[in-house]
Image 1: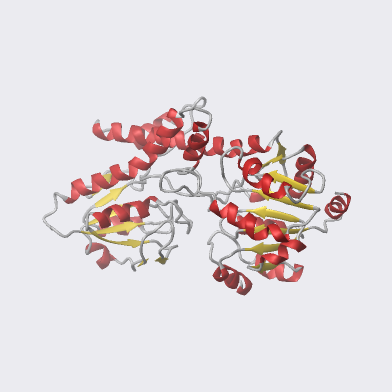
Image 2: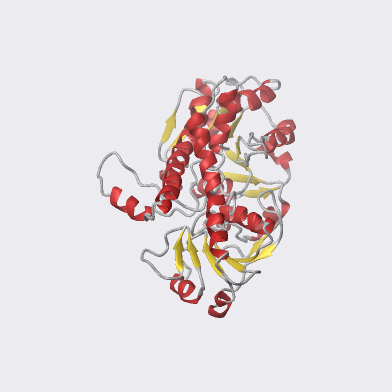
Length: 430
């Protein structure tokens, strides 16, 4: 402990970040920016190859930092034996859902098995992945405590990521960092390390509180988006524009925060977190009706949007309609497709044997992965190309798309993102 504290005080620690995706890579960049040596680990050798060459694979991460990191001795590796050289291990791993809506923790389990033999006394292990309360204590602590004395010669913390891809008005360093430790000593040491990269550290009393904090933040959003998505369906039946209702309600200066409807939730957190807590609550004999319902509504809204599309296709004379899907990123101005509603829409259209293509300026190709079922390429969206489709559905409202060109050259536009604020004969709000 004394040796570790001395390294921290002298800013001589080496940080190892495992998982170089939408959370791990910005965190790597942040620690490197403040002059700390960072080793980045990922089992995806193609990612490591690109990083070593300075090639970007995440749009919103400034890859200029790669030039600086080479000078500072930072590394990108798929060789996990180098874990023995780092003082801090930060796990930024995916925690998706299984098909039965239960937590899929294989990425954490597999990584712990992979790095365990290289772990040594005097290290700190921090989990940042979104998960249910109790994961760090029940899954990671038992595996480590067989080899180390937690809180004495090995330090375990949980600090939930608060990444919001594409957001430019709040820098990562200015986002308060919540942190809980296995012991008080773990919390204190973890806070000292994160203090290098974040202006404010919010220390909480336990690992479980820190884990629950992340779920509350995202379930809060899920519940409110679920509410407004359900209101959208009611408003549609009553021939009321829900977006105009939201705009008027937003003038209230207290007791109200606007949330906006869409074609369904995407990203790693909001579509998944309600089901993580629901699953855990069942172990305590609790049925989280309210939370579970929000998750269900936000999944069903995608089906509702597709049903609106199919209803309008019936009015066409063409028995083999062609559909253009605009946007496959889960939200605008990013290149992240995780849990994107577009992928679900594509799957539904495929089952109906309806022909479709997509356009997304940030995602030139889609590959088979755990989110998607086949390989596709983005079209070159021209005026003539737009005219060749029977219907265009807007799923992601990227700012760099010429929406006026889309409207003028599309036979029918289904707008799920309120791109068009006024009425047009060929535009239907969904």
